[in-house]
Image (cartoon, rainbow, N blue to C red; front, side):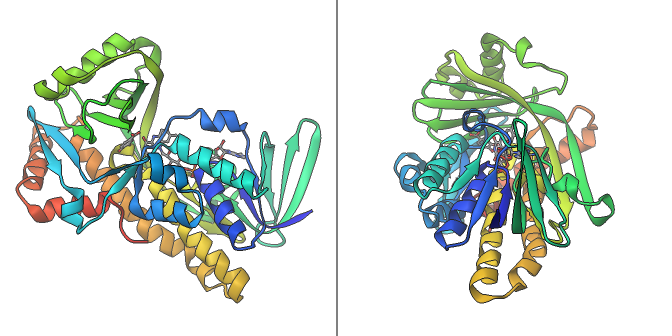
Length: 389
Ligand code: FAD
Ligand code: DHB
């Protein structure tokens, strides 16, 4: 059997690309290692750039997002016992972000694929891309049966631990990486959020974030050492530590409740260059990872998909490979800006255990400068709502 575009990974990147291409009459097959329930069980990102929201509309998957997602015109940065607002809308000339969970977004994409009879193969084991510089094909296993599909192109949307990037010969790519000496402990709870808008908190005990999925579903995070485990953080300990890191007034209003999900994610910056090898193209977490502080992870994946979608349309509809040839450079230019912003937000707001007093002073000054300069705030805002594609 044959398809035009073979996609490895049925996360948001793979599903969105498959849906967009299908609407243009371009055939795709998506191979996903896990079951749909497993993919939908992962609680991850929650903030969408306005450009991503527009892409969901183009993919005809935005109905529920537009109904249930919340438009946020600003967020708060808490520090030194107080909080200051970042007026996204005012500072960017009218832009904002949409708060809508990755889980919901992925569910909508699956439903859209179902409606068009899009092919998404779940529980595909041992997926392998072959002959990437010649006539590419994919193989996988389901039980004892081995399958094969030939493709014009293979798109690696299989996340950081996927097989796509690992299939590229080591001497054909360069990897750039920074790991941070801490992680984020995240808790989801069916409680009213402490604030209708997100609060990013810098505190000497460590960073904290008050986020939400809706006005009845809260998502909170605290910075923890990498050696901590989910088991040692009982709900009571979590709520007590979160309160300590928030301004008194905010802490007093925090409504606590049983956690319905709790997990620890390590923080990492990572980029692989180029994002192409022969007829294999990488997109999303398969090619790059950011620490979550700037809410860029899912959004950087979406911008890769935007560029790939247009490049593949150019190939199939106009017979031009110019877009495909330019993909890696174009995607990476935006990816690195997301990297810079995520690194900066992380550096601004976290406690770095090994840092010296001079560096601590610089961090305090970075924050003081931010709230004393409209131009500095505007720079933060333009990055947070998403740079143009
Ligand atoms: P993924 O969502 O990782 O999807 C890849 C898919 O490929 C998965 O479904 C996987 O099962 C499948 N796959 C993997 N290997 C194979 C294989 N060999 N064969 C077939 N299929 C395979 N971003 C934020 O902005 N805010 C957050 O709070 C946030 N929290 C996060 C928490 C965690 C624990 C993680 C891991 C990421 C988080 N992110 C967050 C990042 C954001 O979720 C990702 O950027 C986003 O999921 C990227 O989408 P993707 O489709 O490229 O990759
Ligand atoms: C969420 C995660 C983030 O990394 C972020 O910067 C904002 C919100 C969230 O999961 O809600």
